[in-house]
Amino acid sequence: MQNKVLILDFGSQYTQLIGRRVRELNIFSEIKPYNKLPNDLSEYKAVILSGSPLSVRGEDAVHPDLSEIRGKKPLLGVCYGAQYLAHFHGGSVEKSNTREYGRANLSFIKENEPFFDKVSTGSQVWMSHADTIKHLPENTTLLASTHDVENAAFKFEGEETYAIQFHPEVYHSKDGKQVLENFLVNIAGMEQTWTPDAFVDKTVAELKEKIGDEKVILGLSGGVDSTVAAVLLHKAIGKNLHCIFVNNGLLRKNEFGDVLKQYEGMGLNVKGVDASARFLDDLAGESDPETKRKTIGRVFIEVFDDESHLVENAKWLAQGTIYPDVIESVSATGGPSQTIKSHHNVGGLPDFMKLKVVEPLKMLFKDEVRRVGASLGIDKTLLGRHPFPGPGLAIRILGDITPEKVAILQEVDAIFIDGLKKWDLYDKVWQAGAILLPVNSVGVMGDERTYEKCVALRAVESTDGMTADWVNLPYEFLQKTSNDIINKVPGVNRVVYDISSKPPATIEWE
Image (cartoon, rainbow, N blue to C red; front, side, top):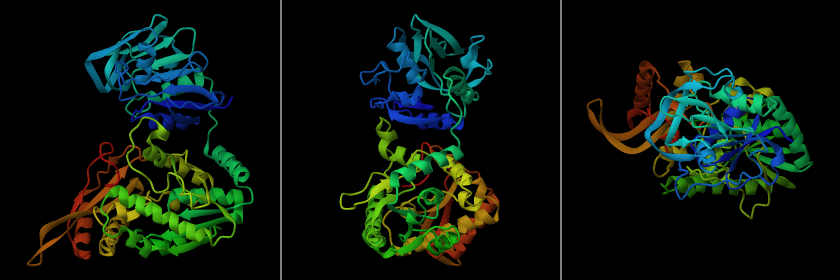
């Protein structure tokens, strides 16, 4: 039996956070759709049922097949998962008279209960439900309550099946990580052995076996993900890795040359390909965000197809895809969660491109990628680089793309990012960038009336990009940056700062 946790996704916005919290305990987790159980459940030592926007009382209530899980493996139901275990196993769930959303406190915890070891009465938890468990099944024991929710936690007697109506995965549940550790380590007996070093050793061994002596082409972007993927592959296959850095005409100012120089001395075989005219020509006149992404993805693949023919006997295309890319593109690995946007490096290759795909990081979150990179000895400055979207400035230029707009945004972005570094703010921000808006506004420069572009600045703090808060940058910094942009970038006369969090807003504007 393997030391993995299976998380069944019922469509909750928090499902991915459960996976991250489990991994923070150095235990590997995998998210699967509730209706697509793995054929071999012996790989998993414990199972967690996620929350859901649905109601167990509704006609569209989802029904997982738990016949090979319940009573046979330690099982934890969270929110909808808890209500499912109650409602369909002898208890009852009703619409709550007092809907409980947000912070609550545990007013009762059963004494000497291992599930709540090191958790005290009064501990803050996070609720998010309109239904409530009115009556527990007969063969259960109440474990915890809040002031408004009597049946906040319970367990089934004679089996390792637990249920909680609150969300232990969100930071607002102060002892949520402890609750998960109690369940997984103390009750399920899982070993906390999943570390960056262990991931590197396992992944390198798998890559050697999977690829053998065949050649691999990898698209480098200069970012953390592709760099870590490259070093992992280089460690596994050495000279058989051929890295290509494509200039799509949508990079930051001077980035093409800077990135190529960055990889000098790292031992990687890197070739620079300037395809900027090809990308910009295909994007001309297109303003729909999804179409822009897909156009960039198509041209990206075409460029790689051209380059693959120049590498004799190349068999593989490597990509720096990470878990949030997969989740946001294919609805939590095919489950009921809603698709947010497509990613150019997710979804496979067209039939004409005869390369197999290898994605060594596709099960990692961004913070995990950085830890793996540190384990590989990659420079801290490179690992600390902000995420930059694959489609580049195309999704930071709202509307159609022109070389003139790209040039304007490159200058604005450079002023903003350089300013963050000079003010010692760069490492305090998870991601930052500028957005060129399809809006002209009236201004006065000198004694003349202007009618020029507006740009928005965006800076967020996050751990994995799944959720994010805007950063409260100093007014003095914003004032200096705004003045520099308006004075130094022709065509811009107004600067605004985006103070939206994710959710409801995404980090990128498109």
